[in-house]
Image 1: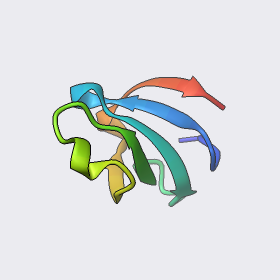
Image 2: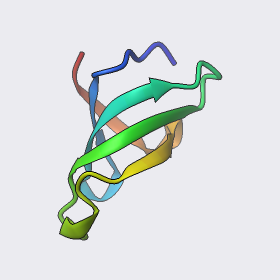
Image 3: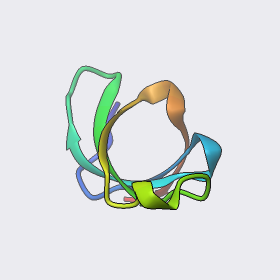
Image 4: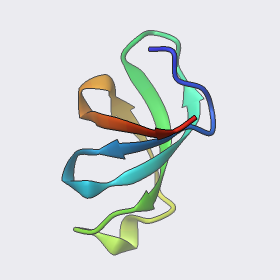
Length: 60
């Protein structure tokens, strides 16, 4: 997956996240949640995200 640090992604469940690290394995990204409609308290949380969870690249 050729996604750079700082890229914003739309994930499942309407989550918008910013890439903070690309594991360079083609599958995993470390992201920070920017918008999380179902769980607003998760905004700012850092999580691992699998490539299958990415719906759309919003900005690079």
